[in-house]
Length: 109
Image (cartoon, rainbow, N blue to C red):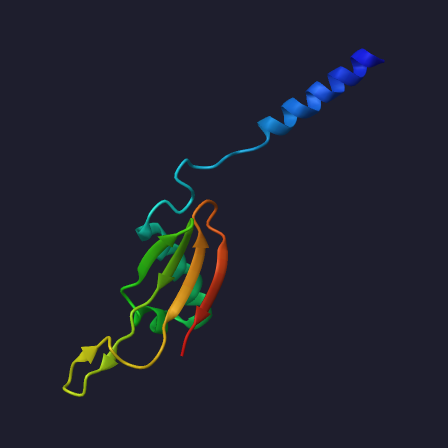
C-alpha cells in the first residue's frame, strides 16, 4: 500500500510540472512596440478606429512590470496647425508584461 501511495504522489508531482509553461523569458510583452500594438488592438473595437488613429503616436512606459500605453492629444493651435498642449484626454491601457493581461483600459476626456 505504501508503494502505491508513493507511486501516486510521484505521478501527481511529475504530471503537474510537465503541464506548466513558464512563458517567454522576457514576458509576452517584451518591448514598447509590442505594448503599443496590443493596446491599439484592444482600443479600436471599443472607441473606434478613427478616434484611436487620431491619437497616434502612442507611447509606452514600463514600471513595475506593467506597461502603460497612452495616446497623444492633438488640438488646433488656432493658426491652421496642431499642438499637443491643450485640454482633453486620450486612451490609456495598462498591460501586464509577463502575460499580456489587460489590467485597465480607459479614455480620458
